Length: 407
Ligand code: SF4
Ligand code: SF4
Image 1: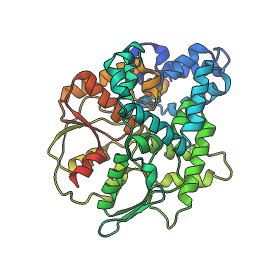
Image 2: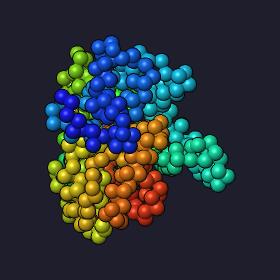
Image 3: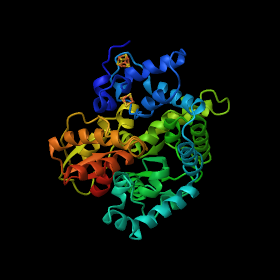
Image 4: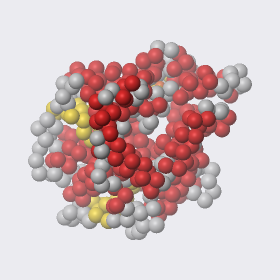
């Protein structure tokens, strides 16, 4: 099919206006490469690298084209057959193969970044215009603020339910989230336990593998998937759910069945694991909220994270939770359009990402919210940068942070 109904929903097509940067154009190029009529070279890689993997096109497609799987397979093919420039290759390998999979290395890298942020070096670099001169001022603005206390200290702990126990879950704390959103993880534990849910933090858990899969490192993503399946199965008794507060991690874990389908030892276990995975908003909507202590009297707008709306089909639950705590939820136009964050996309494709963000902020500005709410850590950073760029006074919050305030 070449209907093109996906084009208007594709953020890179809207930003760049070129067919080769649209879903239809990218699928066409994939077919050409597959048939040997187009080289797997610089041009092809550029157009595939520019894709956010946001899956807005998959939702729009009336023919059910599974673009996400096409993209991941293509990216894996690129990593196997295409020579990226040496420095880029080394940096990618170091980040994906060594830093992300190791909570220890991630923690050490985060401490260096925290030192830069808090020692005055960052303020100095900003004030002197050094970052602007180096062309990295926007990247600096997008880098997450590293917290004092990382979530890793909670590995292996169990947080008891308050009042009558209504459920038992395993919580995935995430790699980047553990150093930059540890307070959000703690808020997630508080909201769950206040709602009568016992929360276990499996000690042997690891990064979910989402960033690896999106970058084309499918084998590394499989290693992460196996680690998490093992980590959960070590703990008994059984869980009702494996919960994540990051849309990208939840979506990746729901794909473990496909990722490990040819693994004789793990295929069955992966399928079982997937049946338990829930986004925290999905899980809370399922069990039902207890009456909060106070109502949130604020005008909010909800920005759907792509990996929640388009990858997991979760749209109603976060809105229902916000309404349940008294928020006035105002719908912005195209609430489920991508904000341009997409893992490390806003860093490696900064210019396109900022164009996409600026359009998103047009939609946000139209409804003049007091708070922009989302349900993914990457989107929170991007939207915060967007409100600053646009000069909006709205705060940016995760659904869970508002629930935490209400309790
Ligand atoms: S995944 Fe997103 S950026 Fe990529 S083609 Fe689809 S809509 Fe466009
Ligand atoms: S991906 Fe789907 S919506 Fe896009 S051109 Fe092909 S058939 Fe049409």
